[in-house]
Image (tube, rainbow, N blue to C red):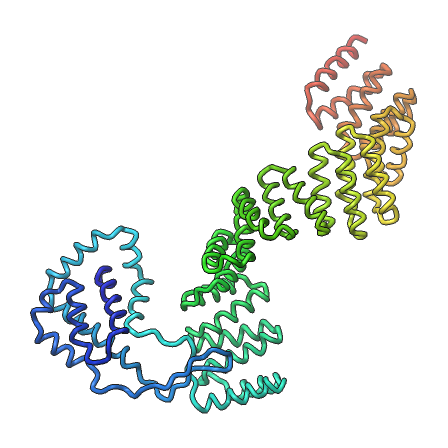
Length: 549
């Protein structure tokens, strides 16, 4: 069937579903034939009439008693399973239209093919796809309810279940549903069983029950929705995506469903569809801030920081006391490489009394990178004060950075604050690192003796600290204590990570003492381990001196 004809027949089915019940067949058949451009069908009433007589039902089916379901304990009740009159009439009418189309001959078919070529290729691709063909085939049957049918005996059983639930006897309700349920029973039994497990927060059992319900009745919308919520609660976001997508396919295009779908996509790290779902939720419910927050997060995760920051800015106009919004915008500013704007947001969060050790450490890091060292020290120490269990790792790293930038006073202030707050809880590694920083401060301030004392303490704590050993060797050399310096160089050279540096320093010491033959092997080994032009030039000079002797 070609695409244009499919569209026309689909329109005809819609007309059929809303047509008056008094003898609609003839007028509908002529309408469909006319829409299809089938002049031959209109001019050959005898054949069309014969088709109608062959296809039309002999008598009207028995009427159905229907009760709309709105609560978990309610379901549609049917005493008969015959198809609805309008559905039967619709199928007969469409079949008659198809017969009329066949009688129209090749001219009409050629005409339709010509019309198809006028459609965009994208539309043609969709209309010719197997998925659309299957959906269209299902459209010949009028849409049924989104609730399974329940017989009168089953309704009585369900009333017993509801009485047990009302009597605060969920175990009794489960027993009844398990006893009366089964493959042949209504899917409503499985749905109610799932709801009981849902209320008990037994997500695994609830999902299993909902799976049985939708397997029996694939259009059971409420079962799909509750199943999706259970998947979210259990952390199975892909399962939630499948369930909520099915809810939308069944026609429940409400803001909450789109919002839940956006949340599931976001947690599954599929941020583009998360954005789309949240936009649909906002379209249907522009007042709910949670949907806009979700959209902002989806934009942020896609790296669209400016858009995310602007959206959060609009939300802050209505909710200026929301720390979550200020923090989300701060993260966007950091992504935009605007750290001081992020710092403003972190400070506002602090004035709101919502700071955490993480936000204070983030603020301290921003300040140290912006060379605002006093403010950085204050925020690092505030983080340690706020959380007694917080590790001082970030504060120690901050102190090292500050000292390397030459801000010795602020560095010493931060180190003193760390030791005052965590002295009994510092690990050996942390103590060693603090000592290293102190030794650098001493060296920068020319306090050689203090530096040597700190370095010796470092080596005592960590006998494998080659950097401290090399620095001690240099200190001893400066004092003219050659053999003591060689002792430290030799110890450091035994460590792979420091062999090149130690042997270079050791060799240069021996050269200064005129011991060229001893120095050359050390310098050559250092150059082999770490090639560098300066050492290569120096080695050549030493070799010349050695030959000259």
